[in-house]
Length: 425
Figure (cartoon, rainbow, N blue to C red):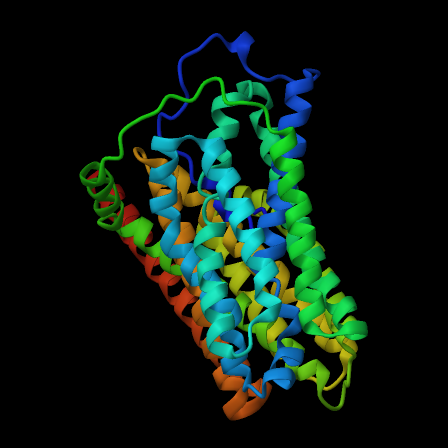
C-alpha cells in the first residue's frame, strides 16, 4: 500500500479504459492533470480522515459514554465492515452513473454524516451513523483508480496513483493526530466535529478541482456477470489463500491500533489524549516498509517475504508486552513494518494472479482486508477487556500463526510440485 488505507486503489474494472487518442488524456504539465491530482489528493484525505476518525478517541469515547473497549471499538468496526460490504456495489454503480458522480456523492454524503456524528446521544446512534458513513465512504475507493486509469495518460498513471495514495495515507494519519490534539483541549465530540469540517473542506476542493470525465462510457449494471467473475476468483485456491492472509494481517493491525490507546492511557504510561494521537506518526514506517517490500519480494519470493512479515509482526507484538514506553513504541514500529510488508506482498500478488477480472479480484481482497480490520478491532478489544494487553497480543499471535500456516502449506505444495516436475524429466 502502499499503506494500510490504500488497498482501495486496486478496484478498477478490467478493460475499463476507453479507446481514445492518447493525446486527449491528461499529461504532466497540463492544467487539467494538476487539477486532477489535487482533486484526488483532497478526496483521498477526506475519505481516510473520516474512516478511522474515532480510533484515536476510543478511550475518551469510552469515558464519555461509559463504554467498554469492545463497545467503543464498534465505532471503528462498523464503518470498516460497512465499507467492505459496499465496495463491489459502489464499483458497479460507477459503471452506470459515472466515476465523478459517485466520487462526489461519496465525499459529500460522508462529510455531511460526519457533521451529525458529534451529536449522537448514545452508542447505538453513534454506531449506526458510522455504519451509514462506511457505506457512503465506499464510493471513492471503489472508483478513484478507475477515473485515473481512464482520464490520465498511461505514462502518468503510476505517479497519479502515488498522489492519491499519499492523500489516503496523510488523511488517515492526520485525522488520528488531529482528533487526539483537539480532544485533549475540548473533548471528543468537538474533535469529531473538526474532522467533519476538514473532510467537508476537502470535498469542496475536490468538486471544484476535478476535471470532467472525457473518456468514461456508461455501461449497464450486470449482476450476473459480476457474480460469475466473483465466484470464479473465489474458486481459485491461490487467491483464496491471499484473501485470508490479507484478512489475518489486517486483523492484527486493526486490533493493535484499536486497543493500544487504552493501554497507553492507563498505568504505567498515563499518556494524554494528544500524546495518544501522536503515536500514529508510527504510520510513516509503512511508507518505507511498502517500498522495501518490492525488493524483499524480488530477493526472497512471495512466500519468503511473507515469512519475514510474520516474523517482524510477531517480534513486535512480543516487544509491546514490556512496560517500557520506548520498548512499546519500538514494538509498534516492528508491527507496523511487518503489517505493511505482508499486506503489500499479498495485495500485489492478487493482481498478478488474476488473469481476468483484476478489478473484482482486487475488490475481493480489499473486502477481506476491511473485514479483517473490523474483526480485529472488535475481538482485540474484547480480549483486552477480559485479559488485558496480553489477551490482545494472544489473539494477534493466533492470527499470525494462521498466516504462517497458510504460507507454509503453499510452500510445501510448491516443493511437491517441483519434485513432480523434476521426476517427470
